[in-house]
Length: 250
Length: 204
Ligand SMILES: C[S@@+](CC[C@H](N)C(=O)[O-])C[C@H]1O[C@@H](n2cnc3c(N)ncnc32)[C@H](O)[C@@H]1O
Image (tube, rainbow over all chains, first blue to last red; front, side, top):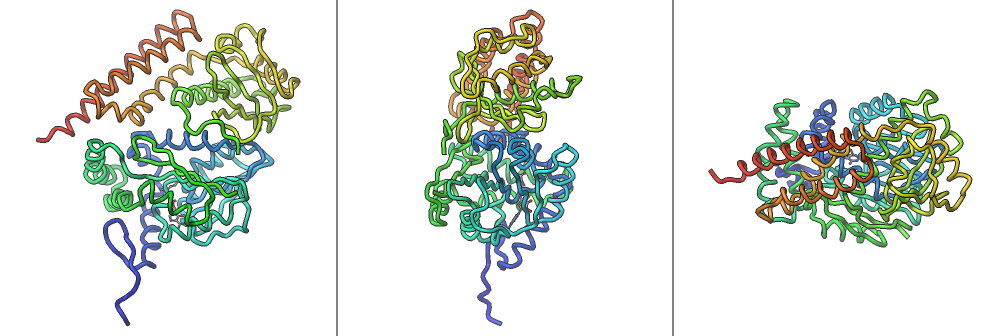
């Protein structure tokens, strides 16, 4: 066999492409149970604000059909479901069954039923017809997708004309001194906390590394335009720790 | 696409969440579980609370109200009133000077439904202060690292604005006193965080 198998970053380690999907799945299998607690600890609770801000800016209203891709344990789905009403619908789609199961249980416990569907799907090959959704979100998920360009094309395809994509993702910190602190936090504190809380240092090391490897604000915006979006813009939150990219299909 | 702003100010975001929590808590505690809102299901009401200029959009679904700062398209009905009148609704049981627009019957139904609720603004203030801590951690970072005074200035500025805003809206003594305690707590916690971060940043 030739040695030219395509490889792709898995955090800082290059791995063969097919393996990344498996590895990412492994990471989320191992964090699913503690995922919500870790989110709070990792971001000092601020992830809730980033998500709230995203919901607010979506301008969502009753009757709309929403895709929450890489929806995981359903934070965004829950809020959208409250807003689209009985005429609207939210589809929580994720590649990982354990995450979806945790999410579904959580939402049912919170009394959210009737307008939410749960689907296992890969972002790179979405199991939905063209022009299906008014709004699509992918929060802290794109980073883990192997072929991001393909995923963006798929998201464009399933949006209705006039529809909007919102990508919430770790990005590049803009302030130099803060960037230094943030690096220290990500590579020294975060994995240790992962070990303490979830007894899983490796997964959180991967998270820190994958954040670093993710395209910065301008690069991602260009990727969206290349994937077909007719307009794209972004908004930095918390000095660029996180950026919200928005793209429109006309 | 008709979203009014691209960036929502943080106090406004926090206000929208505070109102959301206050209304939903009141609905849950209501004997009728907010049944008065049933006819309003799947409607959107825009609520402008002067002197705040930007409207809030209240979405009623399945005896729950969601509040947000932007909306695609138009609301079904609009209510414009003062913040003080709105805050005194649980006592006054009316909005005497409100301006209604769009489907005015719907707007009136909404006001009537609100009047059935006992909204405890005092309780909700504590959530608002909790949010402020988070806001400062998440969004005060530029000043935190750029300026020497950093976080202290932005925090006290935000708290000052917030305090003025709340004192006007909720003028009773006990509420103000309790709120001030919470502001103290907020400052203490933010200072502690600042100290921790400074320690981390100091090269050993
Ligand atoms: C960090 S979680 C984010 C969950 C949720 N959106 C949130 O913000 O809390 C990332 C999620 O992306 C999912 N994921 C990773 N690769 C994916 C892919 N190729 N297609 C769909 N989902 C994927 C993971 O299973 C995981 O649930």
